[in-house]
Image 1 (tube, rainbow, N blue to C red):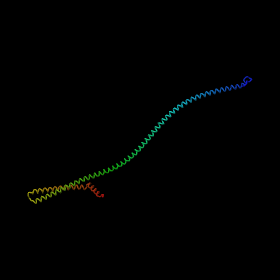
Image 2 (image 1 turned 30 degrees about the vertical axis):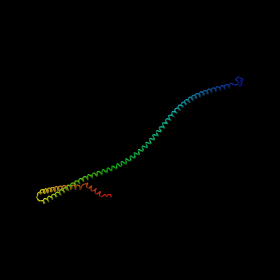
Image 3 (image 1 turned 180 degrees about the vertical axis):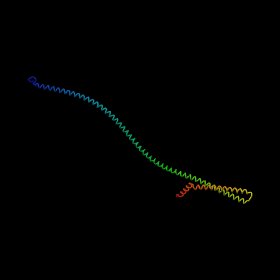
Image 4 (image 1 turned 90 degrees about the horizontal axis):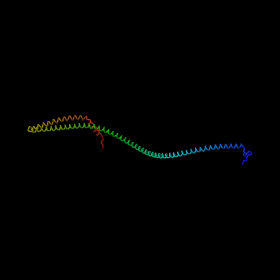
Length: 251
C-alpha cells in the first residue's frame, strides 16, 4: 500500500496525477471511439444480416425459379424426346417413301423401256402395214388390169363363141342346102319340090346369116386381139408366168 507523502497526496506528485488524468482522458476517448466503432460494427452487422436475409430470400426465390426451370426443362426434355421419337418415325416413313419412290422410278423406267420397245414394234408394224398397203394398192392395180384383161378375154371368148356359132350355122345351112339339092335331084319335080325349095332357101338364109355373123365376130375378135396385144395385164401376166417358170421348184 502506498504511504502518503509528506505533502498529504499519498506520496504522488501533481505531475503524476496530471499524467494519470490525461491518460484516463485518452482512455475515455479511445473507449468512446471503440464504442462508436462497436456501434458502427453493430449497424454494419445489422445491415449485413438484412442483406443476408435478403440474399437468402433471393436465393430461395432463385431456388424456386431454378426448380421451376428444372421442371420446365424436364418437360422440354420430354417434349424433345417425343419430338425426337416422332422425327425418327418420320425419318423411317421418309425412308420407306424414298424406297417406294425408288421402286416406282425403277418401275417407270421399265415401263418406259417397254413403251420404247412397243413404239419400235409399232413403228415396225407401221412400216409393214405401209408396205402391205403399197402391195395391196399394187395388187389392186394389177387386179384392175387383170379385170380389164379378163373382161377383154371374156369378150374375145364370147366373140369366138359367136364365130363358132356362126360357123356351126354355116355348116348346118350347107348341110341343109346339100340335103335340099340332093332331094331335088333325087325326086325331081314332084309334090316335094316346094319343100325342097323351102329347105334350100332356108339353108341359104342360114348360110348368109352365118357368114354375116362370122364376119362381124371375126372383126370384133381382131379388134380385141389388137387391144390384148397392147394390154398391160397380159404383159404383167406373161412376166409373172415367166418368173414363176424360172424359179427353182422345191423337191
